[in-house]
Image (cartoon, rainbow, N blue to C red; front, side):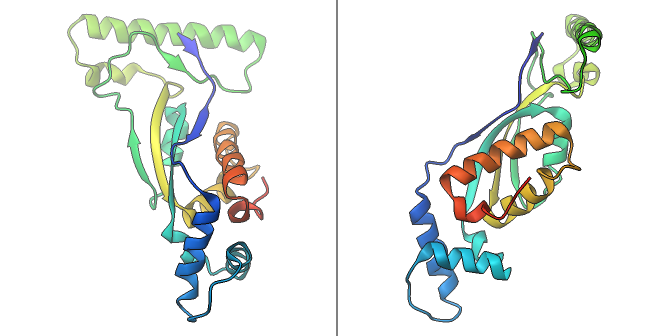
Amino acid sequence: MKIIEPTVELIDDIDGAQILRKLERCGKVSRQSKLGDAESFVRSIIKRGHESVLEHVSLTFHIVCDRAIMAELTRHRLASFTVESTRYVKYDDLKVVAPFELTKDNTHLFKDMIHNHERSYAFLIGCGCKPEIARSVLPLCLATELYMTANLREWRHILKLRTDKAAHPQMRVVAGQILDILREKLPVIVEDITP
């Protein structure tokens, strides 16, 4: 068993200024206005709520989280997902994301439970079960990898929901990492989003 932390990586090589120019070009067609300051234009459409223009740019993130957080992420229907399959992957050594709230005493119990899951899974595989059958004993904290693509308007929606204090603590970590990356690469798109 290996306990890991959730991670996020933007897999697109983006040019923030070029993206803003594209959004400005797409957005100004509605009024046939001339191109000018792309950043100011994008900021103004966000402020006015005219975010449909943001749908012309999509970004893809590689996310490592647990299966429970993955289930929450995949509820965002306007995004596209490719997820590690427990049906086809055979696990020799479980990677898990431990709940953040574990105490020193709880951590020992948590590790014991994960070892039980590992033994049960290995037993089923050893009995000739396919991974798609043996997976039924895997825990929700099992680490998984996924790729998630969404347009900028949907990323804004996701980040507003998933960085909120009411969101699950591990979800806030994943969403916070995405927000940090976007603050660095495309700050005008997320400057009004505060966790």
